[in-house]
Image 1 (cartoon, rainbow, N blue to C red):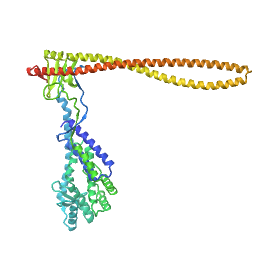
Image 2: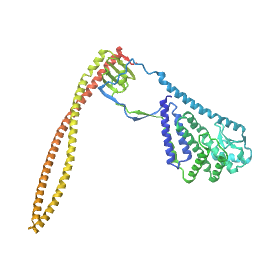
Image 3: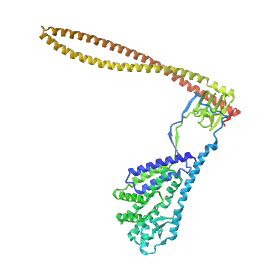
Image 4: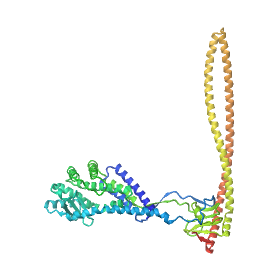
Length: 554
């Protein structure tokens, strides 16, 4: 498996882990059993990615950049000399080998760390003794029946055991701490047995292997650790729900039993989490179960939605086009490049230019092409010259299109400058309009003042100073009228310039439309010429393949 695949698996699992975490946070009514399955799916996603399963292709990426015009001429990219040595494979592979060995070492160390736990369980199984008294047998039978087990599992009392647990893949066994049996009443014993037998009925002994294995293989991935921890908590809470779901269940008595069994001594857990933290989470889930009505079918629907993430998905790019560059072979994946190092006449992805340049020797003119998944190169000067002659008409059309494009660019620049000037004039017109409005308002005010002044002067006709003031006021008004007429003339000049610019813009628009029509006609002609040239080039290259002029690229 490549590092790219590991990276892809890691990203997909991280996305699923974020989705599950948000789901658990936003849907508090989700059952603990549903939460356990969701986190189990995160761990399973990591392991499923290691299996080479066929992926569902989802078209979600953009099509690769492709030059579809057969005679597209591009500037040459930096040439890769044919004689340049390839990068050392050993040097490139060294970091990958180092990372692979580090991965194996980490997985091996975590696997070895589980050996003491396995030895400890085997010692408990050997030291355990079966419960022989009638009360214990009755409690075992009632717990097994309530869990839906057809076969009653073995139950052993084990000295020095911290807390009850279920173990044994092929022969399930419930281990109980012998030191606590004497202090446990019949009801407490039955609840403890019901919890452990719920693990057996749910298949937790087998299902728990998936998160444990995922954490050891993907020890570097935080999602693997989080998934195992959250699965373990939800699994315990699901068994708590099973116990509390019985008709005669007493939630308060069960809570006291959990506190008694988990707080009296320092406990060991198989996951990196404090047992007291796990107990707190379990008690919170129990409280949530008692306070809220948990989801039923809706919860399973959310689980089914998350399970869709188990399907391997491969994002692929859209098809660049349905038309093949060459009529050679049965595949549409064809391409060609006629290159002399300075220019390229080509059809296909632009990434092919480097492949073609890698085959071209210094000063050489070659044809590189791909057909039916194989790449070929033609070095014969006569064949290359014949191929270039096929595109002579296309080159001529391309030159005409380039000349028209330059004219269009020139006209476009002129239109942009005219538009800029029109914008500036528009701003000036706005300023002039505001100025004329202010002048008109001032004129009306001054007319009112003039009438008032005239009335006053008539009332004091004999006063010489009043007469002098009146004359000065009249002179000022005459000067203002002249300024207003000057502003009007300026406004007329601006309007005339705006009309001139609009007329020029209209002329340029018609010329641009004419050039666009010429480009459209040349484009249609280009398509026909390109198709004809490609058919002729296909025949030429097929003949070169038959007579040995075309050689398979290295």
